Length: 365
Image (cartoon, rainbow, N blue to C red; front, side, top):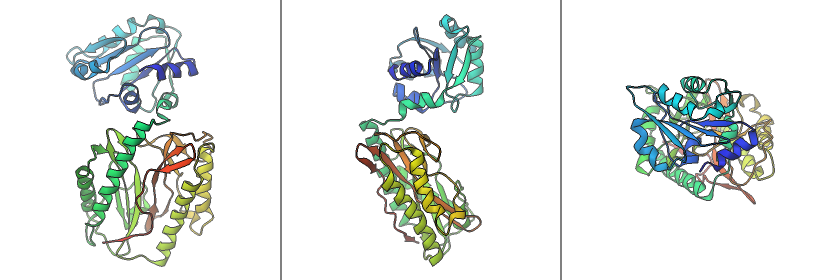
């Protein structure tokens, strides 16, 4: 199970790395643990036996993973530092003049402080990207789980749309969507859904309002996703309530053209920058160029945002098994916004679009 991490150590030349609960931990050990006030950490040295510091109440869940090293459990009344110090003593080769990699976007400050006390003299460096590379290429089994999450999410959206009426609030629509996600088989949420109408749709990360009622002509942007066995869907569709103006129709069609370009150009062998450049060029050459705000997309898997980042300047070459989003958007501050997002996987012959929900402009309510 530790082979991917040993490979990371070989590539980076570091003396050890540390995993804490999160998507990388889940991918390596096939087990998910909550990050809470009780620290849990696995230290994998390049040479020698790995060790783990584990809260006692989690031992019943930790033991079945078959961890191939020493485990130092700790109880609440004793605190965690004793277990960290014991783990450090079990790794004397790491206590001086060593470099240890950590997940900079995941590890908490107090986790790091405990490691620094346990391994004095070690230098801790952020190698979040290198560790996360173990999740970059999805296996066929992972892609199937992601496909299931997307199918559940799309069925939930369709069920939600038929219930939407003029006069509903954004939070009422959100509640219907959440009910439908779980009733269709989601085991969790990829993130808190974004349900934004009218001027709220111009905020890419808006929050549903309990006091805004849908009215004719509103754009209704829904960005959401359910999870299935931990794997995330991330889908956005924008609809119009009762009617749409000619201006808004042209606005929508411009975003759709950019989305289409992204799906057409994506394939193995080109870079993430190539995809973003092609998509943004469609928006930048339109009459709505001033309303473009963000990159084309991001990787998707156990985390809803992971590598590869589909943005200009990222020269990472797309390879089979990479899953990412294509989600161009345009946003008119104080007025309206449109985003159309699909999830795709790179194949040997191009891409497969895992999302199939129709993209043509749709009137609801």
